[in-house]
Length: 184
Image (cartoon, rainbow, N blue to C red; front, top):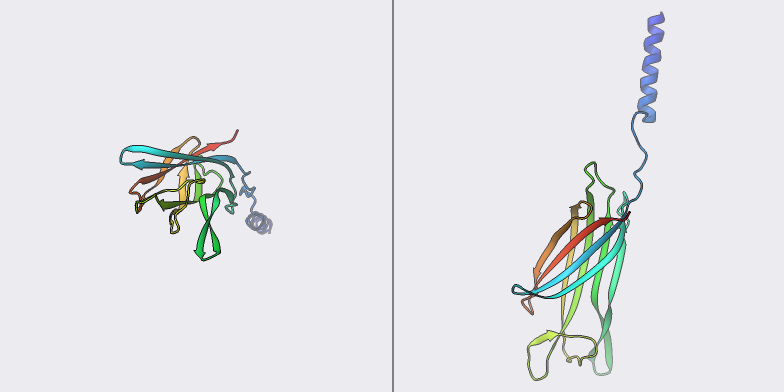
């Protein structure tokens, strides 16, 4: 009889431990403050012609809470006689990250969007990158690099080339580098 009570009591403890999750650490990991640097580098052949760095905070969270950066301007475009529309030009970056894994790596998700405008220059039909303050042709060309960079696995202090793409108008190559730093 005592052995039945002992076995019954032991089984009850096992059921209780299994039901309540004792023995498992269910406490969520605290959020970690990160600083993410995204650099758009433009190359004409082997020569770097532009470098556009963006630095933004990005905290870790289990549900991929997102940090956003929006930098740019709106370009007025005449679509009909006396009718103007505006086109966004600039850089948009969305960043989210999971808490570190057992090796200290962070799973980072980045959405990048870099929009440019090209305008034929003077008497030439050749499109050149337009800059605010310069006259804009009546029919500008808009260029865009958009990427959803999923599951970039980065350690503290690590830099990776996350993207390389060729601009079909200029023939220049754009390379996107991402650096992750833990804020201490």
